Image 1 (cartoon, rainbow, N blue to C red):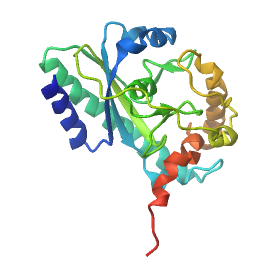
Image 2 (tube, rainbow, N blue to C red):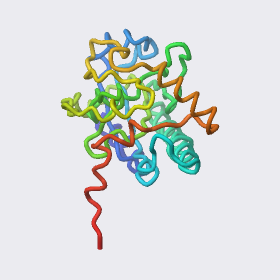
Image 3 (cartoon, helix red, strand yellow):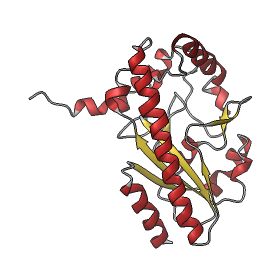
Image 4 (cartoon, one colour):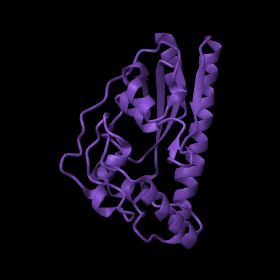
Length: 243
């Protein structure tokens, strides 16, 4: 299995993805099924890959950004990034299939349950159980190095790969910047708890309604404020120096 894991990791690194992890689904089967993810039944592992978003674009996201910023964000941080993720998932899936294992690729950033506003499987949950970050008060996966400025892809597989890590400690502390700045008022400020429903922390319907308003105004369902304001995502600015 070590050779297979290395082969998959090499693909991820060759595509310049900054994040790669393997999670043990068995440890979280009860919680995942409670969220309606019956699709995960029969799979033992999740593979997570993450692509960091453009800081130059995300930094420009404000409550009422210029239309150019909205177009750039939608094109480069959604459309093209999602395509890159999905293409890489296909490459990984082919490797798993070649080695005799089943795999199921989950499309990047795509809601499949229109009533509950869920995807087929939670990319954030997969990355979380892989030890790549923690679920913040914004319900986004927060990484230490890039904050929530990462787009995720997931593969479910029955290959007995070795998990890369376990869930990390929650590091949001008393910070409520994402809660205070959400234009949809969709976050309650409650900390993540695997035993609680998503609604305890986040009202997806408020967020969806706000995005619909943005679409009527600008033609695109784009916000991203919770991604832009997170202090962990702004660490790149601390590295910048004036010459």
